[in-house]
Image (tube, rainbow, N blue to C red; front, side, top):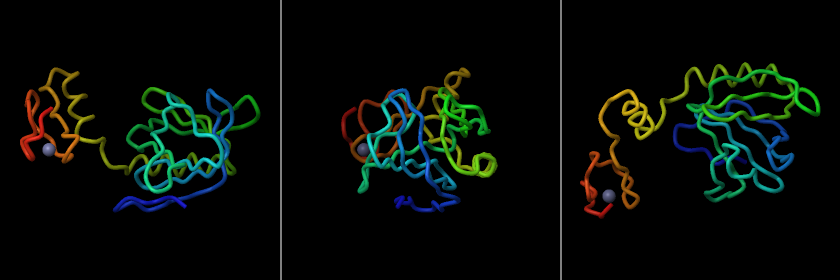
Length: 158
Ligand SMILES: [Zn+2]
């Protein structure tokens, strides 16, 4: 059972096998209006495959924000058809029932997903020659202007 964040609603859910660099990982795949969530019933997906770290009350849950999804489509995998999800820098191969249904739902959800987090948007702007990104305080979670030596909200040093 996926633990939803505030404002998050599930769109579809089903059994999956995630094909990772370290082998297949069975579990449940849930698409919400903000993320793809994989709940592993076995070993975790290896770091570097793009899945966020497990965490929260159910720590077998791995998330990928929809803002990282570029494209979803059916594809031929090594062991049969898969749902191929192209992320910004990685590709996921997911064995699911109803591949066209998942691809369509993911494409639709991605089109209406919230924008990337503020830090990501700022990093992108900086690459285009814009100002440096703000720094997020690891203590209170608020943002301070780039170059700050301490948090402008709580005073914690950076
Ligand atoms: Zn702070």
